Image (cartoon, rainbow, N blue to C red; front, side, top):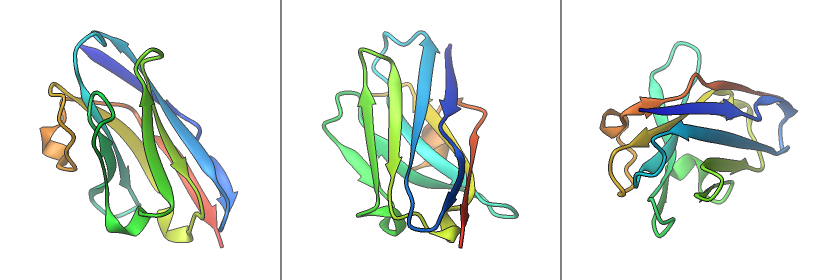
Length: 124
């Protein structure tokens, strides 16, 4: 089992930045790929970005390319999402997820473990 805990959400003005963190605990010795997803009110959960176990491959959806960066520090068992140039449409609950595979994917059904989420609100 892997437990995930997100932090770093909050309220920010449009154009601002936030850095989300996701601390993993439990069976973190395994080679897990990880990802960030988000869910806006009344909408389905969507992919944001994903990263392979060794950080060799990263994926991002088009709407965040050039603004968001996913990274990880395996020594600290922590996943990050640096979000710059935030827009009101980025407002959502952000979730981190881990999958029992080293390969990154943006498909949410491929993930086995999920955090509780952290709220990000971008005001205009």
